[in-house]
Amino acid sequence: MKKPFYCFLSLFIILLFSVNIQAQIGISLNHINPKGDYAHIFKPSVGFEFVYRAADQGEKLQYGVSIGYFKLAATQESFPTYAVAKRNGQTVLYSGNETFNNYYSIPFGINLDYQFLNSKVSPFVGLDFYTHFFSYDYTSNINRIEDVSAQESSFAIGYLPKIGLSYDHNLYFTFDIAIGRSSSVEKGYSPQTYWKSYFLTTFYF
Image 1 (cartoon, rainbow, N blue to C red):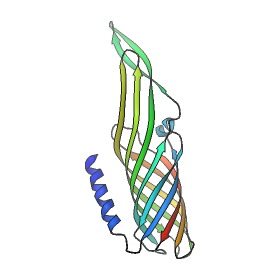
Image 2: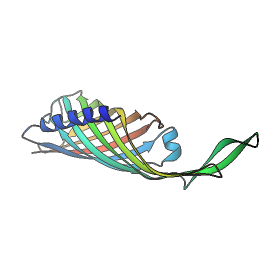
Image 3: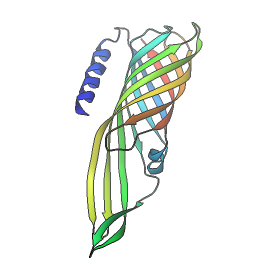
Image 4: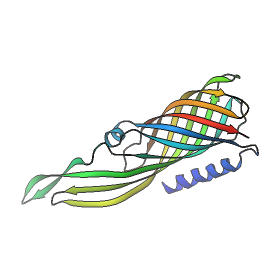
């Protein structure tokens, strides 16, 4: 995963330095709602992103880069688990528990939005591409079999199709609201699938 991450990070930096001299800087407040196996382990939460747009206000194609942060809490203190082992020629089932704590994710994104109308208010569709760096503390204790305590961290590649509404309040501020479903996967980990709804304020100067 390191090679794709470094390629993505290099592209992120190139796009960042391609931003116009007249800066378009935004901050997004996000609601993260895990789905699937991800939702079994983690509760919904909030996060934020800093956004740099390379397109001028009013252009139909809006593109830029972003970096964000969100933290998730586990749905319960511990989760039941088990292991099967041979003992004295017999198959024995051992029970135990595992925990997930201090989970956080830092997404690096390339953001693409297309606005349908040349007006102050316009619906849009978009597609974001992300590299997520994530980390969490993991413990597993199975009676007589396993006792593990470790900090897990890795990278995941993901994408997020979305729909939303954009409003150019004046020459200095644009407000966007949108919702999208993010899907990403890392070898050896469950897919990180979640709904993200957000409110983005972009400041032009």
